[in-house]
Amino acid sequence: MKEQLYTIPVNDAFDADTECPVCAIYEKLESDAIDFVMGPSYMEDDVRMETNAKGFCAKHLQQMYKNQNRLGLGLMMLTYIERQQKEIKALSEKKRGAVSLFKKSEGDALAAYLAKQQCTCYVCDRMARNYDRYLVTILYLYKNDADFRDKFARSKGFCMKHYGELHEMAPAHLGKGILEEFDTCMNRIFQENLARVRDDLEWFTDKFDYRNADAPWKNSKDALIRAILKTNAVSVEEKAKK
Image 1: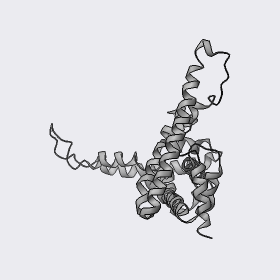
Image 2: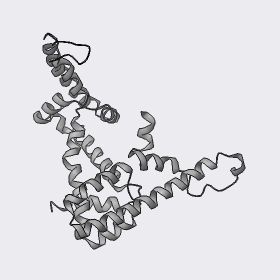
Image 3: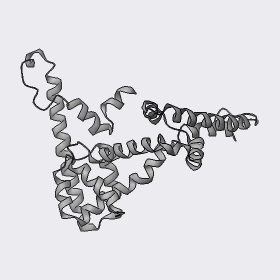
């Protein structure tokens, strides 16, 4: 049963018509994490202790704000700010360390603390607890499930980010023989599908030439959206907001 918690979503992602199944898995993890933190759990002491300490990144704060639970977000932000008031006030009252022209001040605890707060996010951390397990499950299924290997080989490949992550993780989870087969298959589907997106994107740009105004769009209408996902592992809606 525990194994199915990972294998079922992995198979579902590879069954979907997507440029990167791992992106689909990541988006589901992200949605589930947002739903969790914006549900009744925000009133639990252990959750509030973590959110008070870590806060949220800008991307996930935007997603949380879109949620209808404005009271929940307001309460979490209130106790987070109260925690930060105490921490920052205490650190700001400490004297700075020695300063030189060639290096940053030594022992600047306030600067270090503020920098750390920009790099922590409760939602990101909650997702990370399961994300690597899904990548391992992809490799496990490729090694042990012939049907999944066929599904993998028929997929549209991956975005550059997740292609790289699977490539890096594979040697630790696949034996030499299956690793060579995996590399050959993954490299093929990545190159073939990147070329497909590239060709669609070229026709998308060619359509702006007045001489092609009456020509069919073929498969290029959403080529820019797919190109952004293929190269940056981000949906066009998220890209537009940055």
